[in-house]
Length: 443
Image (tube, rainbow, N blue to C red; front, side):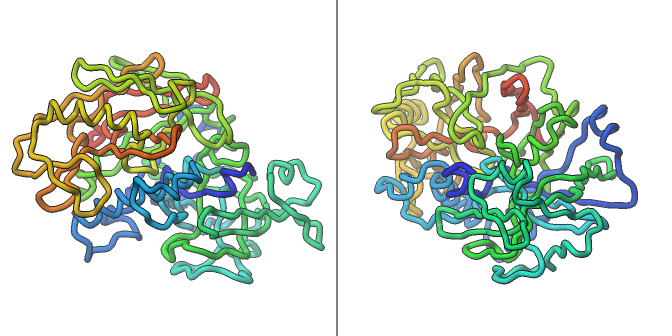
């Protein structure tokens, strides 16, 4: 796999799916109808990562810090930034979890669903060196549909880092930026996804990683990672013929998580974004092809348009990554300075410091802020952002602008707060991404 994929694998899109295996869709039926699965934020009470002892404010602060941590998954130099909080980069920074099933009979696993990586993998028995996991490990010997790939198989050639075992089995190697790693067998097995209509859909002969040697900062409540990126080994690319390269999601605002709303991830025909208010922008190609790149041309504060620029990048194609696993939107320092200055002119509140050291533009909560209208101008698509997530309560009595600067010239990420209450649709065959204003609590 490409260097960036080998160095950072954690994301973006995490999903929790309830699976009932009493009956399943046939693939042909799923292809014709499309299907949807439920997305559950990692801080939702329905998530295994949920900590009832944390206050809502603590959960928000943790999510903000994960945004800073996650920048290192995409841009290695960001972890050495002196202008952003110095927190350890971890590999489980994705904001959503995904439950799927491996094998026949189906064996449920919980993993980070990640649009910033490709490989679908889980810890497997026997484990020569495994991190602590609360749930049982997947046993490939118990699955009648599990098959290892040989070293000369076409599938093994998809890996950029692999080696051959003494028994001619293709072995993958992933090394993450924080020195976490997973090594194991590249294999094929049936992967089953739950759908919102209660009927799971099974996809046979899906390429997976069976991790027998995994260590680092993985969370005990998770079993591995579900890659939803743009590379050949991702779940999206492997389902391409069944879903016609289409998937979409609608993310409820972070402040709605405590109300037990859920988001949706849609595939195939269910993922088509159409109707009034839809705007579309090209998906740009980039290196690695795992990530989803957009071209940001400007952001408007009311009627004041601020051209996207940084000290060296200009406004070239593919200058920002869209990532549902990053909470905040991260932009280069000089562009942030121009944007935040205009936001401050409109907001007109009493400035204060963020006690957690994450944000640069904050106000006291007793200020009567004028919330500005922000519009992101992507190539061919003007996207009005949800006003309810322009400012976030970063601490008691402190409201902060939900954008933060980076000190690298092309280190931009369009995060999930900015995507909330938008139906976001990916079409990997047409290479377009569409936005439609939507109340995601009603979807």
